[in-house]
Picture 1: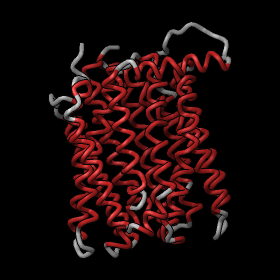
Picture 2: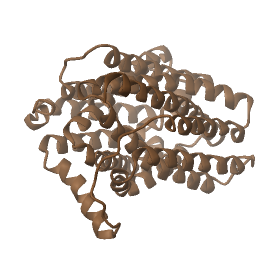
Picture 3: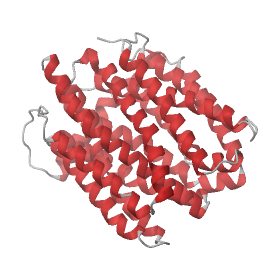
Picture 4: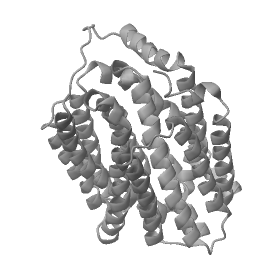
Length: 406
């Protein structure tokens, strides 16, 4: 695709996804505030997190098979539409002042099914449109958009939940999904040429195995997956407790929770800007390992600082956002470069599922960790272990060779 064509195409995709991301971030944070203030329970937050992850983790690898079979543009449109429908149903459930949490968890799970198709399809589209030498910069710009959404979204969500009931706030997500769907109608995304096969259980399993082998036969890539799973296992249970650390240890309220989310988004915006504007020549695997160390350190000191050091917590949160943004962009680019485009849907789905499963196991223990270990100590232990993974990664030769092979 010529330069002006691929960039124009991606501009339409970016525009729609940008609006959708801002609305999703705002609604997500509004729901977190609502659950945190209404129930004051790490267990409730953990169950909400599990509901939003488990379906995607289970069906993700199978969804990847169909993402690689079907028109990826159509997959994104249908996934957005399904997520919007689930949110619309949630507006009726949330109209009750004291909704049944089981129904809330169920609808969060349904939204997770839509995400199982949308997120991998979105990542698998890039190599079909973007020149390979521009992939890292595009990943950086994607992170910039996510980051700006992470700044504006929580601010909008906090403002919305302050003046409107949660049921009304949910409509923001529906509007965002409709904008994203509309933008996709104005772009043309190349379709992969594949032999048509009759859908059957055996063919799905065979194609799923091809996706697994694309990772397994690349030793460096398989180790990258393993370390990412380990890091997610330690980060996720603690990350869900950020609102509790803000309100409990640092004695904050809804505006302090909003500030932390905004600062996290500012950090991610800076990280994405670095990659999107500059031509970073540092090895992508070096970036990933270094960012693991930095993320771990920000978690460790966030739990170590005394409760009166809220400003220090804010600064650490910004650095954590920068590190996560750079890590995510570098990680996605490595996958896009190392894996054939016709298998990317399966590989991205496999990664999302593999990253989620250990985090779900960790989330199951979030309530007991918060009660028995304490939220600050949970941050300290998790941060140390994540940094340790980053240090060890520098001493694994096959991992360090990733991105260097022609």
